[in-house]
Length: 80
Image 1 (cartoon, one colour):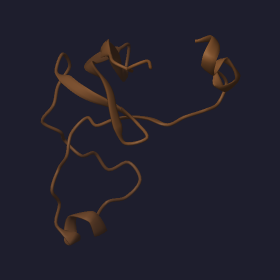
Image 2 (tube, one colour; image 1 turned 180 degrees about the horizontal axis):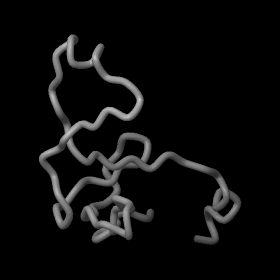
Image 3 (cartoon, helix red, strand yellow; image 1 turned 135 degrees about the vertical axis):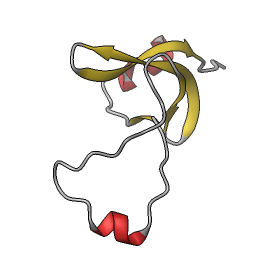
Image 4 (tube, helix red, strand yellow; image 1 turned 120 degrees about the vertical axis):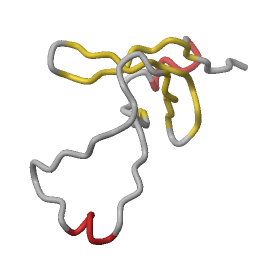
């Protein structure tokens, strides 16, 4: 950690993909604020965690009060 200490406060985007859903152009054009897309994934399922498009770990979908969240189950960044 000492080697990258100066980078510790740099913001990065962390991505998790909950699901993918194919839609027709018509369905996309019909979307509006408040539209709900039903997904096939549910709480407890494993998902990938990516940083900069690279896989860095795994998590599971959890519900925290009324919010969908991700619990990190394995975080794998190799150190040189």
